[in-house]
Length: 461
Image 1 (cartoon, rainbow, N blue to C red):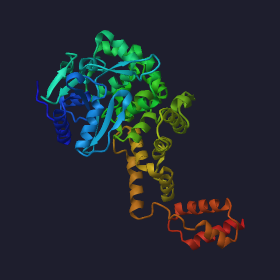
Image 2 (image 1 turned 120 degrees about the vertical axis):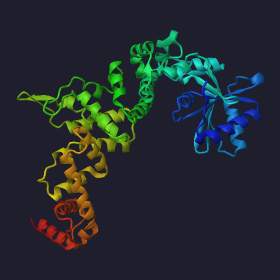
Image 3 (image 1 turned 90 degrees about the horizontal axis):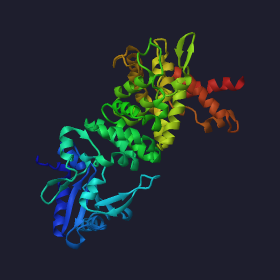
């Protein structure tokens, strides 16, 4: 067995846990993905500690909760956050969140993935987990790895994802269908292959994903999107018919043909290539995934030529629907929709654009300008230095350096206009501000006196 090395950021935490356990007659184990990551020398996170008492209380429902309280008191930590139903508690130590749990068995209802729990043995706890590579325990008293499935260590070495109980492979996914999505994610995250029977059971159980909350699906998608090559996960989701269940707007892009002049791939494969070409920013990656969903609705042939008129606006509408369904925040939705809605504008750039046109473009993009430029670059796909985008970017940077990119805001306030023109406040004020801003796009050095003269002429009409 290889030596397990605890990363420095966790060493003090684990030392405190080990000392406190020995002083108070508890046996403690690091469990789950943290152990797997230690074994493969991958930076671990989500530290979960299983706690068992000794003697008559060898396995107790409150062992983890009781231990967390002793630990918090000893090291003057904040009170643990306790979850009585599951016999767990969370403690913040040295800027890390540590969860203390009891060994448990789980019982599922057919219409829910949230189980009822019962205190159990260590082996029973290992066998209720999803995959063998996540069912390893590291006993802190002697740093020994316990592998109750007898397959965990072997599967890690062979880079295989396999359910803990091959005899109940279908049941494992039917009970908690989120495990299907987790298997997909961990496969691309770790570079592991999913064992054949496990993969087939994922396909059979995919219809059960409907019982999983949108929030949990969203969280898994977020993790997938931040991987180096997220397209691999979405291809796998398509293969097992999971994509059509959770992202039908993306799945239906498969086999949707595009003009050969611009694209060699169907819309689905083009989308995945754009996704991989973007940097790992969650808004940018989500926008890339959804940026062409409107092509399904706008597809038509005009004189034998394939067209997607207005697909950018339609994609923005579709993306808002998808993101609301998956319970994203209002801010996240607003920014992602803005990127999608405007992703075609950089492609419209030409040398004939005036400085005013550049300013209008920048104003339209708002705070998402950099993301819009980035997704447009990825959408081109030819190379990272597409001449048109390079020219537009240089125009923007030059205007910014001259302090002439943004029109001066608030050249005339509403109160000033009311006093100058002796008119009651009304909709005319906003029209006047819009007029001034429009002139400022072409003349950012417009003075207050010039603005007043423009408005006088406007009101005389």
